[in-house]
Amino acid sequence: MNTRYSFFRAFTQRALFSLAVSIVLLTASALACDQQSDSGDASGSAYWHSQKEWEPEDIDALEVVHLDLEPPPFVHEHEQTAPEEPRLNKVRMVISEEEIEVEPGVFVWAMTFEGSVPGPMIVVHEGDYVELTLVNPAGNTLLHNIDFHASVGALGGGALTEVSPGEEVVLRFRAVKPGVFIYHCAPGGEMVPWHVVHGMNGAIMVLPRDCIKDPGGNRIEYDRAYYVGEQDFYIPKDEDGNYKRYDRPIDGFADDLEAMRGLIPTHIVFNGAVGALTGDNAMTANVGENVLVIHSQANRVSYPHLIGGHGDYVWERGGFDNPPQLGLETWEIAAGSAGASIHTFRQPGLYAYLSHNLIEAFLLGAAAHFQVEGEWNNDLMEQIQPPG
Image (cartoon, rainbow, N blue to C red; front, side, top):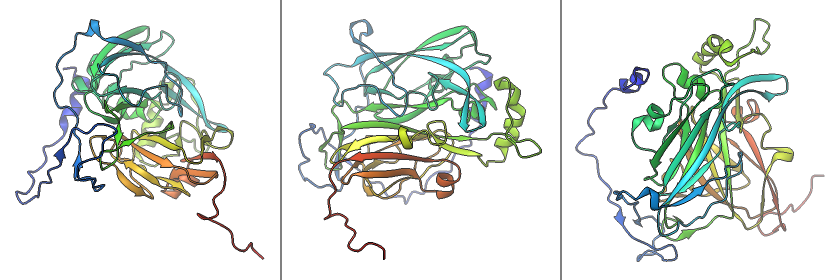
């Protein structure tokens, strides 16, 4: 094993759980998308489990799909229900090191997959294969790799995907766990957090083969899907309090580490910059539509909240094997993970989607907008008397 990954093995073993811990057994059910559970109970007492073992496929016989990735917050075209047989999904991602403007006059060297912060969303189905070609162009200056939290083995692919400038590598893994997961660069040691907090992360969604379901096992369909990648930046300042700017990524390394050790971000933003998803860049929807939002945070905890709406279905920890929580006002995305939520918009207007650590939202930039079109429903809300 490459020694640069030895730090990953430094985790201490946890103490044994008490023998008195109660174990809740969920009844596995093979429910079709259009069928309801026998009990019809929406409490989640009857649910489904993903397939635990997969027979190896003849790779050469599989249907090959070349994924045309979209820059966030958009998600590439995909089917919500998989075809009968698994497919081989081919993805090509080019690494770029480029200076981006986090807010007017404030710059940071971003290390990116496909030139965006976060990297693009990848969507496949449970049991599919993902074949990634990772390209590190000769014009870059640093070694990179990729760790897929959705994969099994070899440090999530990190041990098999190290590429120096001018190289490319091909990795194939099977997506055996349904849910939403992050991916990120993890070249070892201090370089791991440094690359992550400079934007080198993204997400992959592994849909169940049949569909996403509610707690009773009934099909849930979404009309639109968006990807919100939350990013914390730690931009060094000079003695006068002005943000520093560097000629190359590595030039700021020592200053960056000093700022990172304080654990106080200078910016917490959605999709790479303050205002990236507000104003003219707001996400859009129509009244009555179900909108799926995948929210990732590769380094810190986040608390998504939709002002004027709710998380009608929420998978906080991202696992589609688990029944969604219903009707949440605010939920938690754990550090280093992605979660999913579905919102049914019932009124037109401007909705704010933000981290309900309000300091992060209003002072550091963690806010986005939905612009929803449709007819107003006075039964849900009406101003009876204007100010006067």
